[in-house]
Structures are given as structure tokens and as C-alpha cells.
Amino acid sequence: MASKVSTAMLLLSVLMSIQLLAASAGNFYRDAVITWGEGRGKIQEGGRGLALTLDKLSGSGFQSKNEYLFGRFDMQLKLVPGNSAGTVTTFFLSSQGEGHDEIDFEFLGNVSGQPYTIHTNVYTQGKGNKEQQFHLWFDPTAAFHTYTIVWNPHRIVFLVDNSPIRVYNNHESIGIPFPKSQAMRVYCSLWNADEWATQGGRVKTDWTLAPFTAYYRNINIDGCAVLSGTSSCKSSNSANNAKPWQTHELDGKGRNRLRWVQSRHMVYNYCADSKRFPQGFSAECKSSRF
Image (cartoon, rainbow, N blue to C red; front, side):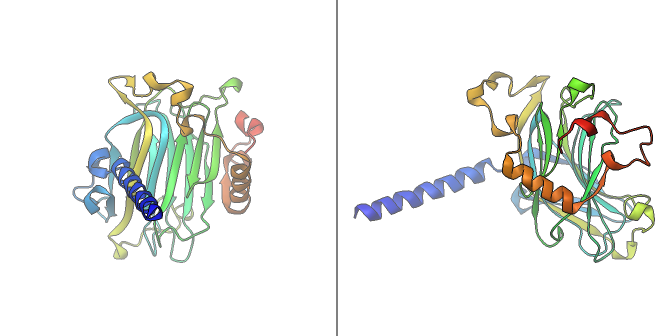
């Protein structure tokens, strides 16, 4: 009898945990607003999912309702299938203004059978030129996968299905600006960039295949929302209240995984492009471990 009671209590505990997770999960109705596309963006599944569509007249996009100064930002995406040449699907953080900060995931489409290119970049005070690009080790159009940006005062980490693909460390000690003073919103979009997106613009968008659709699901933002100039984390900055993303760094397993991704799947690194930077690479290229 005691065993049955224990089992029932365990099942009840599991169900309550699932309900709590569901309650805390992101919802596009609550967390985001469709900002452009004239109806080409649609929230689905009661707020769990969102579809963006691109046709010859327009793409579409949405943004988070709040802006944040540091956090962990998770988004599940299923990219445009088939011949996606010329299309760009995005998930990024950005502030506003001429000297804006930005942290980018951009997914550059390609002709059927060729891999998507993940384009990452970091802008600080309006300056970028810190691109790294990767091919994925799976088909990103066949199922949803989770793409994550972790941003804290020490580093920015890009993850795919919780595997790190890039780390951009704070190198202010050697004079390299780091994005840490401007609050940013989450932005996502699907748009046409066939002048540069696929094989340097050599392959154009095939509009006979339109409309193109990308799917977003399970937005999850755990960050310091900035409201009226005040961070929601300001009153909870003690070590006891710190969240994992606030001190996130790679352990040995994470460093090994990062090396595996970069050795096998990186297709471009600004720190190795001597033709583009004949005067020498940026200082962080020499001091960064990754």
C-alpha cells in the first residue's frame, strides 16, 4: 500500500512539474508582437508557435515586447525547406540607434541539397565585422531545433541544441568594446537577400516556389527586462539569486564540443581572413582561446 501511495505521489509531483514548466514556457501572444509583413506573420498553436512567410512582395517579422540587458534567449526554428536560395531567416538581439549593439543568428538559404549557412556576428557601438559561419550537422528544415544566445557581462555564447558553436569573450581589457550598456530586443524575420545571401549573390531566389515559410516555436527568454530604464535584475544581483546564464562559461565537455564544431563545421572565420583584413586581425583574435 505504501508503495502505491509513493508511486501516486511521484506521478503527481511529475505532473505538477510539467504543469509548472508549461506555465513558465514562453508564449508569442504574451512575449512578442508581429511588426511587419501585412499578415504574413501568424501566431499559431495558442501562442506556442509562429509562422513567418516571404513572397515576392514582402517578408515578415516580429520582435519581443520587452527589451533586455543580458539574459538567455532560446528559440526553436524549422527553416524553409527545399530550394531556399536567396532567403534569410533570422533570430537576433539588437538595440536601436546609430551606434547600436547586435548579436546575430542568420540562416542563409541555399539550393536544394546544399546546406544552410549559419551566419553569426557581434556588433558593438555600430561596428560589426566579426563574422563566423557554420554548416549544421543535421537538416534544419526537417524538424525543430533550439538556437540559443547567452549574453552576460563576461561573454556571448551561441548554442545549437545546447551545443556551443561560438564564444565571444569580453576583451575590454585590451581595448575591444563589448555590448553591455544598451538594452536589446529579440528580433526575428524572414526576408529576401538574394543580392548576397546565397553563394555571394550568384544564386537568386526562385519566386515560382513562393511563398516561403519558416516556423518558430517555444520562445523562452530568461533575462533582465529593462522597464523605464530600470533592470528587473537590479534588486536580485546577489550571488544567492544568480541565474546560471549570468556566470555561464564552458566546462571541459563544452570546450571539447566547441572545438569539434569549429574544426568540422566552421566555414568562415573573420580571424582567419587575411585578404579581408590585410592590415592585421582584430586584437581579440590573438587573445581569444576559441
